[in-house]
Figure 1 (cartoon, rainbow, N blue to C red):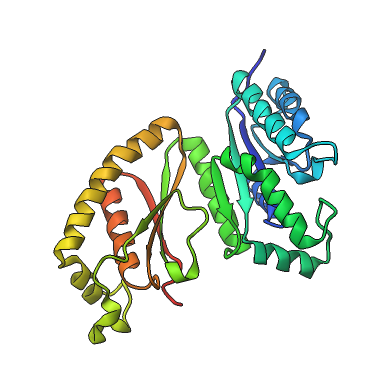
Figure 2 (cartoon, rainbow, N blue to C red; figure 1 turned 135 degrees about the vertical axis):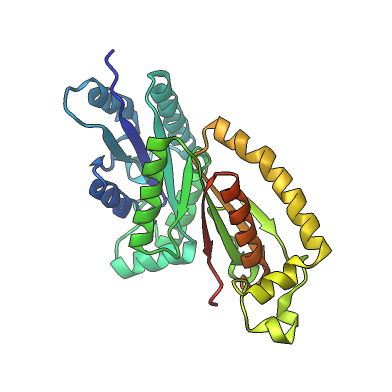
Length: 293
């Protein structure tokens, strides 16, 4: 069987999380996109693409709960989805599964604003709850989970662009995010670090109104022995973990660093992690989610 070097992305996730927008973004990036493809047809579709003489090298497929009939339980759907991925893999087809998610209140608001009914035919709240339960096994299979609760369309496109670049280059991009626990844990975090045990500049009058981007705050936190011990142990752990993630084929890793409010300690530690990994020649991006809250 003739095989072409085709890039395959499978876009799935919660209804209302932005799958249609994600496909449009990938279309803008030059991908041939097909939405609402029955999961059982995915291997045949992939064969048609790879066997075709057409110059289609980049493909994105949208698969979601809309294909689930009343006779298809979530366990059956999960089994079929997993079997489909195994078939793709056995045929030498390289793919990535991207799962789009959003917080329940955000999904409820989006459905209310668009006045669309939930695909499962239930009221919005119960529909979201049932869908989340049905898609839990699928979420666990994803190569990348994107939570769209607090990102703009342009940010979604930027994230997808990064994934496309990874697909081509085969390198792992590390995203380091600082956050405040009182605003919630980032749902797309692969590794979460709690640094609330470090000395808190919020209790120092001269530092309280500053943020972790201030050199004064950074010096205060880094001057503490416990901080230096923590960074030494953390860097040792990352030295072990990251090469193994790369070896396993992970293409996108999110390290979330949290303190109470997300303005001081987590910001400083996120910056320290970024600078350390850059010295180790990793591709790293940093974002401070709650620094202005």
